[in-house]
Length: 404
Ligand code: HEM
Image (cartoon, rainbow, N blue to C red):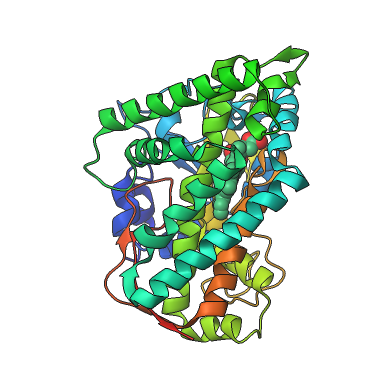
């Protein structure tokens, strides 16, 4: 669809359907040109919100944590309905100065020693999975590969006992209501509570008998002179799943889809013409797993010539920033050799993704396993888009891998 000015104002960015049924790039290019800081009307049921679409403005907003708060929530779905109940307790929805102390504690989960072990495990797991599916030939990459890697990685990171993992994986699957339009919100809520209860028990056990693992490190650390409550430890452990599971999953799916869509770019990676790390960055830009993040203004401010009032919701559209022709040459081309490539897929500023290193390591492991094992990648059926105004990508990707 190619929207006119009327098209811009008539698209509802709070509605997941918008992202299933429209060509987003034409819409965003027009918005960046005509109305880069756009007021999206509300209605009787929900407030209006600002839509920031240019790369430079999005980066400026991510940086301005002093006037753009995360504490009421950071996704439109939550902000348009009320406040995030984890505000001030879970890292992503906490403001300075507490955010900084809490982030320092959470960073312990990502020490070089822990990351080294987890990266090794993710490389091994990915290699085995890719070998297996390549022998099968035709399969759904989303369900048979991508679904298994991130949760395994996060469980490794938190040293979840192997016997507990099937339960956690099962609850997490139910908790993710975003994949389908008709998902049951109550079952999802119940599953989220199960996960929180599980982590609360685990935190209590490890507080009583701390070991050498990440959950023990978080439970015994102090934030502003006090230990976190076991409930807050649980919330922040769960936040690693919230932050790291779906985002990594959709970027892996996007990598394989992009290689199937652009075989020349796949050959460039496969034949070693382009380094894996460079290609990983282009996959991240192309995937833009989080369509947007959002903030609430705590003071009046000027943004792109528009007057934002204290209390206004400001949404920052990564999906537009990552394809802004003011920042990227030929942004609508998937070019694995793109360099520099300063995408905002991991955000920017004080809330920059805590798991970026791990997200990159997972993609690096995937591309390496593909290069070692696979000669050709082809689509074997229509991919299915995710039903969400936050998570970008596909929940099903039938493909055929031909072995090397
Ligand atoms: C924050 C994206 C992987 C944990 C963020 C933010 C983005 C993002 C855009 C900034 C949110 C904001 O500014 O409000 C991604 C993408 C990933 C990924 C695209 C994979 C490709 C991970 C992984 C983990 C993780 C693997 C953990 C295991 C977090 C946490 C935060 C965060 C805890 C909050 C940081 C803070 O508020 O200080 N992520 N993420 N992410 N991410 Fe990731």
